[in-house]
Length: 199
Length: 177
Image (cartoon, rainbow over all chains, first blue to last red; front, side):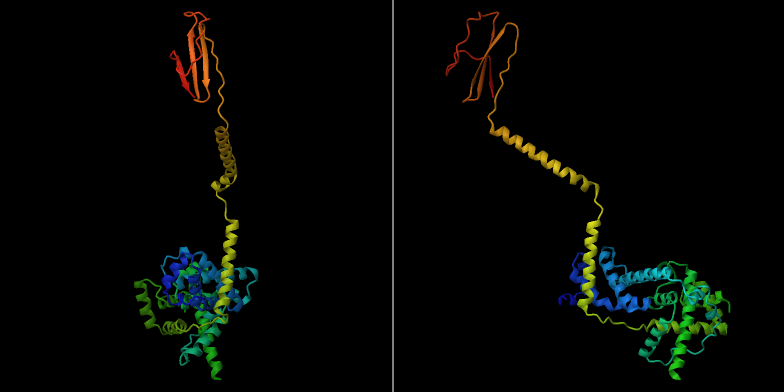
């Protein structure tokens, strides 16, 4: 740990790291490691996997540092790297195991979500922020990988449909469809969790 | 409500529709209660998630987390160095390097030998009808003196005397070696 580095601006640290200064890169890792790990965890829902993928992302970041030209912030650039690694890992896992009946149903059009009645009451109304965060986290854990990923990319990373389709290697129509069912499922899960806690 | 209309409501909510279509869909949502309720539901989930991602904190220390990254960076760098494709000029240099070294060494040795050993001069004889030649080589001054004589004009027994310190006759040719 270099105490002098902690006072430096992100842009200066990136520039120095691009010139091969590993201490500057270490400072960037220290600043953003929680964010990168958090993104990996939100997609994988597995602590060990998220830890490994976040560290792999930093290694990739170091190797590709010369390709970073500051079009976005450094953390946005790094987040894209970890998202790509997570998506690769999820695809690998998908190939390795047969898809569950539930997942196949979701891919087939989400008939259950389509027929679900519209939730008239805001499922998040009146919740404390910390409580809401926890409920969102619990609800996310219950979604399929595809639905969770599309929600994370759209709601947390604020990506457009086109960008999500590119990242997930699918059509914009599939993104729209997945996002719709994921939101409806999320709404019903949050409402269910709210009912559970009030009982 | 049909699925394509549901997706239209969502696209409108996410600002993914072109301006003109967005205006039309917005007007329809305002008139249609079901579409309006769906938009409100999707919007509430969207708004709740936008600002409320659960923060995750790593339990590993900074040093421990970094140590694995650093190790992996070093390993990858080493692997890349070992498996890096060798360019053609590097392969050529690999074989030509020693050959050029040997050639350079041979040149140096030849030059050194030539400088160490005093030069020897072979006597060259040429036969020209009616011509006679007498040579004298002075090692100390590295000078060779050649007398040429046309025997058709002078009798053979009139050979020139060996040159003294101050030669009487001017030699026909003097070659400094």
